[in-house]
Image (cartoon, rainbow, N blue to C red; front, side):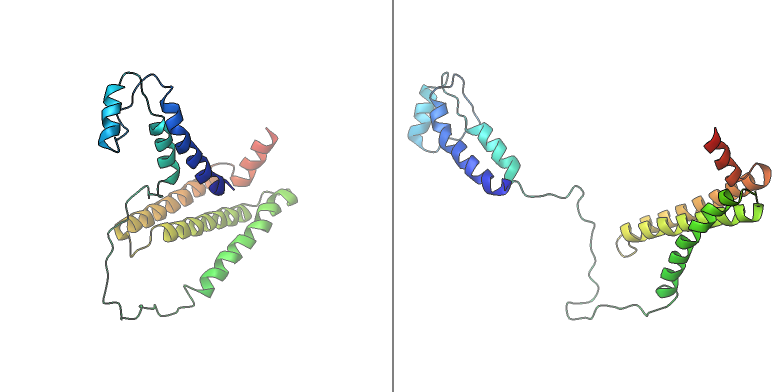
Length: 198
């Protein structure tokens, strides 16, 4: 609706601009003179005339400007020619259906593992360790998918490698921290119970 009305409003504003010009008190130097005669008249009436055109022009330029990307596109490489076929990777069930099934299994396993320690009321360190490991694996898979989507190897190989190593280091650090928390402190389930009851 707005895209239909906007051109009509701009046409009306441009049509009203000459009428506003006669009643203004200051000038605008940003309006170009279209003819020699209008330039002579503008120079004679310089202290009294201000065109409403610059404001309308700024509004029109703001609404009609083309969309620009925030960051420039990265350099692109063309391998081969236009007639070469697109290289297709060899299919592998490890990177396909097995990987997808493992992601779904981890996600589904989190539901009973999250509920079981609180429903049973007993503190089982083995169950707590399985819950921690499943949470870390689930988080690792999710962040890995984000890195794969937003930083493809063919486009930004160095950034991709950096974020892959950063994710692996963070995963190991979280696993070590949870291990220390499970063995030398109260454990994840008991900590959540204490926070919940505080």
